[in-house]
Length: 637
Figure (cartoon, one colour):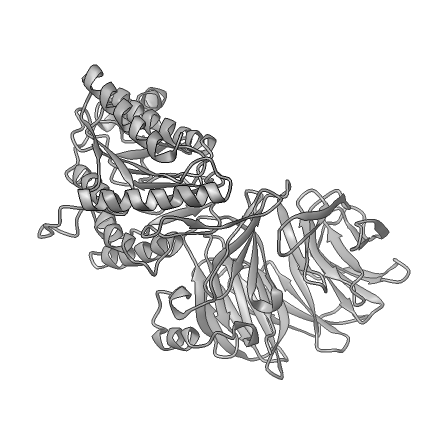
């Protein structure tokens, strides 16, 4: 059966069900005649293309929009139905076949969702938009139908049973194997429960963080713990909420793909909300590879043998660059006109609130940022000569982004949580895991070449030997291992200090390894013999990192109290110490900026500092915005 015939039959069945069952109004919105003829031509063209490529059906664009205002037992809303109707009309004009459901009970809401999901086929694009009340209970999100009861706070389970679980919708969509699922929720309004006994339900406001299934893009109208505005003030006569009125015009911009649209919605809504002293920053969860434009009929993608998708991206252009919301307009213009990103000396910082920022080390200016994807970061790493950034996430994912525009290129879930990434001399990726797994991944296809259990605890870091043949890994199990990069075979293991967890290592020359430990111990180890030459307490608790100063025998360590300590090999007393950060110092490393060596340090105080090569004078103090947990640098040139 052709995709077009399937759509027509599905519409007819839906209308017959509605007439026979006499349910709440659910309308199917068809494009206007001219638009419909244009859509038919596009679908016919797609069908021919699908046949040419061996596909059985053409891609369908299906949308369900739900708007709930008339709640009978909890606080009513005024703009959710308007939002649903307005967005539905916009999607219909873009070739979507739109079903609109307004002021629906739990039974009718479930029926509309199930009918919609059942019509989605492999290769389709499916979009669900919901405007109305939504709450978080026990870390899970629920969309509220108009007949949801105002129960006692002790009856959270009853509210869950009388609502629609977001996780259930996402899972049902995932099972349909669509090309792309888009879920947009303008459901982060104030606590809907007027009854004083139920105010504990959803008391944080907003919805809870989620992990979007592969192939799914989810967007919230407000971030975790925030509430979304219906209006900007008493004199705001706009019929739509602040989020939806911002989203609709952006959907029609041909220069914005799905992720760019979400980023621009986020920026504009934040500015509007701040104009009335309200914090509202839309959040999105991106588990999609490739690009999708609402004004185009196809998602651009390539399939890899691994089953993961990799985007086929155009060359970077000025419009591709994420424009940070800062006062650095001049810097943004300079960045847009400079496509030679690999020649820049750069630092990248990853914060505890999922923000990743890319900095120009020469000018100490912000280049671009990745913000709003709602990913927990476990490590980050520059690769491909600074043109890509590899990001490992706390849910076990690994993603590659093209820089500076942060376009997602690759993804893989290797089966373990990645805690360290390094790059081999031929450009492939070495991954170290939370439970001691080491793997080699092809950088282009993101397929695993080999995987081996090298340690019994977390791996961090991974160094590549000077000859490029071996991976040197340190672990929380207190050992340093040497592994053959070609086949993953263990070459040798050094037992360091029993019972002490290694946090970082650095080579001092070719024979000595400096190892730092979680309890504040520093060890000097002979790499050739595996013997511990010296071990002592540095006196500042947990040490996060170690790096060599210049080409001499001096090195620097970072402490839990924000102190940087400078040492000389063979001594158990520091040469000098520096209070660099007001909170935990998360790292200090040396990089090249032009012909000059510069020390960079980061801290839980959110500060990225650039120092002179001696580590004595601060040349720049940059604010990441939240605690910096991870960072990396690219020397450029």
